[in-house]
Length: 152
Image (cartoon, rainbow, N blue to C red; front, side, top):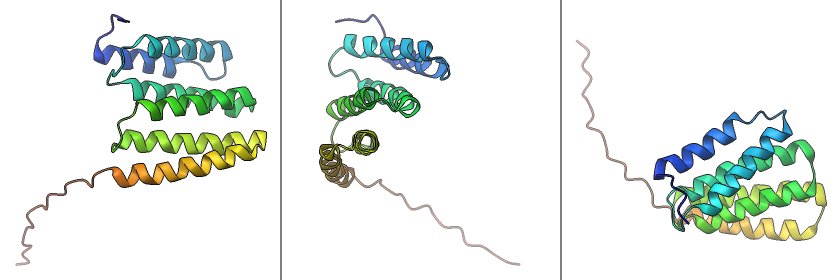
């Protein structure tokens, strides 16, 4: 489906929705969540900003879940983190962030649900996080020419 949004418009729209939603107004937050879901589902497969969009949505969902402590809200945060993992390219910092959010969401959901499956899944996510972090190439450091300091 074509959203009619250019590459930069997609993520800017999601960010504006997320960061203009008044956290104390659940209706505003829900509207932002609904609109970002719509943008994500209408975006073409492989859109360069999908992983960032899922991350923005995750942040909103986690904020809401922390306020409500409702298991359904934590489920939504875990699902958004999982979608972020699915659309991120392995070997990138975004993949590491996605796995970190998945691990974090599972641990936080476990605090509410006390479901032992959450801990098992969090352990698996931690392993995947370690693997993702190891797959990110080390940055190429170019040594700067050193200046000789003179004390006259």
